[in-house]
Length: 58
Image (cartoon, rainbow, N blue to C red; front, side, top):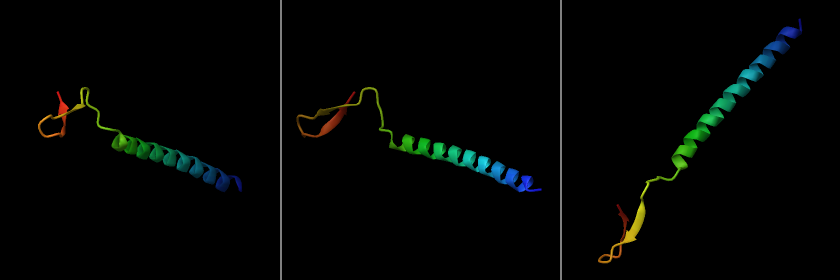
């Protein structure tokens, strides 16, 4: 009769680890997406000669 509680605890631990691993990956993917720099194919900056400000060139 001691087998049933041990089996239940083992199954709960396995499902808990799977859940935590899935959540960990989901949160890290969200953080990576937020932290990723905004990328534009031709986002170079040029200095405006009149104002001295930096502006994106197209």
